[in-house]
Length: 371
Image 1 (cartoon, rainbow, N blue to C red):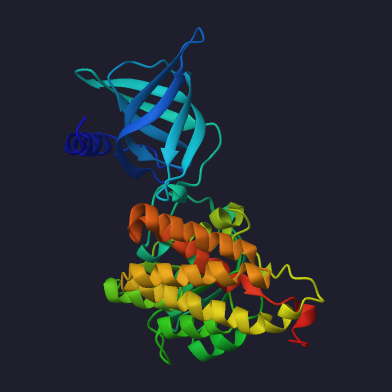
Image 2: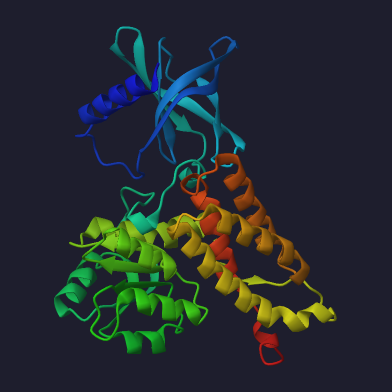
């Protein structure tokens, strides 16, 4: 099946199913006309064929094929990440329906959920999130909401009313900056604040070393706002008018999805032994990492691939020497992605992971006084 034909048929099938019950996870367009899937047929026979894929979710895959496949058929799917890494995913056929001619629409359910962000760019800065439906009771923790509109503050409290989130509302940037270190697990910041733009507040908060998710809420989400949010190191942008779904999806992306993604918010400490002379340079290096994270964000927004590669090489070379091997490994993955794809968009996930890890580097509390 040619790419144009695959796209046209996929759009037609999506239109037909637009009235389906809302799913927990988003089905992302994932048009691939040649993905290897091993089907283990009843009787023990395994077929090794290539199928056209039309969508992907954390829970499963939608494919098209010329033959009927029985429900319950076990399979192994071979998906390739933007960096070129092949991953084998186990699943089983849940449904198969005839579409037209020899074309059948097949739904595969994964044995265990996958991280869609390994294969698809899910960019929260563009209002794209992994979960389609978020059960309010699954959300808990502490959130600070910075907004000078009493109406908006009441609205957001209403949207979060069925969750177990403890929301602290603040109406100005200066108070928010003073209180951001109180232990909040996420920050919601309106971009139109009376005392400074929301993006400026995000930048000031990041400069204090705060690594929690910061979600910018903006009435104007044109490319300039997204670029400013990226440069300020915001975690996500949510557009107005606000809805319960938007707010829940944004918060869940970080408190639910990232929390289960290899400890994505944990502080990173140096592995150097206490008697290692290099420890004297830790504070300076950690500050350098934060500055480098800003430069990486700017290089992404200006689409400067050469600068991105140079910055990643710099981090890869220095981080392990200061006891931050995971950060060096993250930089290596970003370099491999850039080299394999030649595209910033297709390398965005390892690049954002690297930014995140640079911001998580810290000195142990018992060493700060010495440093």
